Image (cartoon, rainbow over all chains, first blue to last red; front, side, top):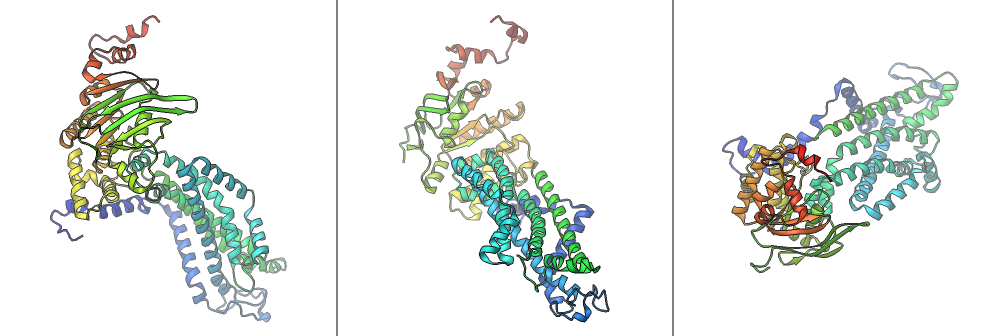
Length: 300
Length: 268
């Protein structure tokens, strides 16, 4: 703003635009109290996200270079975790695998939350018959386990991360929609929504700028919870051979491929991959939990 | 443009049925510019349903509602009609705690209304926000606070400022001061009286509180079970109620010589 600042504070608080931003910051993540465990979770998640981006760039060895004479050899020199059953460097495969595992789960969570919250808010907004049709449709999708849908998707579109991810996203969206619909219904009944309707605000503006932001804590929480589920389910799908395809490195694929080693007394591959999955999923779930309770407390 | 002498709000034959329940039946009234009308009655008498139909939150089963010469008995067909209706009639609700978006300061809320309705630049909007804040008696610090940090009375002032931002011809006060304690209530009522003197706006005051009605309105309608049982000038109706229901309403207000025990023991 080009207004000369005369009285410092007074001029500042009267600027509505700055005010909206300040309010958003005040109402946003700043009020979340994480605690020690929360901070650890945040660091783990951030680390996993960074790995997903730079992992394939910083890997010390070619993750697909196989030398059978090194099969199941333990930690050895610069090979920090040793080798898998085909003599490939385990640490490099973990680093590279972070990308598909993390991005796959993020994709599922984002799509499911977008579809679910869109359905929830429109159902709550229009109510009546539209709401009943959406709810009934959600119940039908509810009946199908995510993995079953993924198997069907693999059969129809071919095995791969994309079809598995889309199938999971479809299977998860009713969970998001169910929870958010009740929150949106509650928000819809608030007097401020009625007041803004009387003001002549359109449905888009009201839903996107008022209704949805007021349930955003729950939206974020749902997203993080689903992220954890998606990581485990995608790993399971890869384990079944319908997700990420070997030889591409993926934590789920590694758990799957490690099972022969596991039986022969070389558990390193499965164990390290499982450990990665467990740590990241726990961190994300814990973070989601914290965000949800913070979202409940804020503003009230 | 509606003619200047005609009513700003005209309701005739208004009826609302919920399932088998008749909430409002054959309600008619006219509201002249600058005058104020009270609708009184106990809870469940249909007062709020009338208010919700007038602002378009509830669709009438039958009857017509005309504001500023334009019919509003049916839902608005487009965005232009919707915002124009917003510039004709506004409402302030009872509950100050849910009437404001918890993520929005008063200044931001008023500013958004101005952006929806007009093409003012930022400086003009800032000026109008300041004027409205003065009008309802809030300082700039209170206007830029989130609702969480405001008291009930302050929130209700913000809600009034937001409603006035469209410069409506009619403001409906649906029990707007009922949730406030008595001293704050008096302050807000004074603010409302000042606003009427300054802007020439008409009020429709929905209330069960006869003292508030007497202070703010010239005319009154008494509703019982969805039907208007008595109407007239506020002073006449409240001083010498004709209908037994109005007499009972008036008798239930504590006053000199009022003995609760005797009222309770009155034989059936």
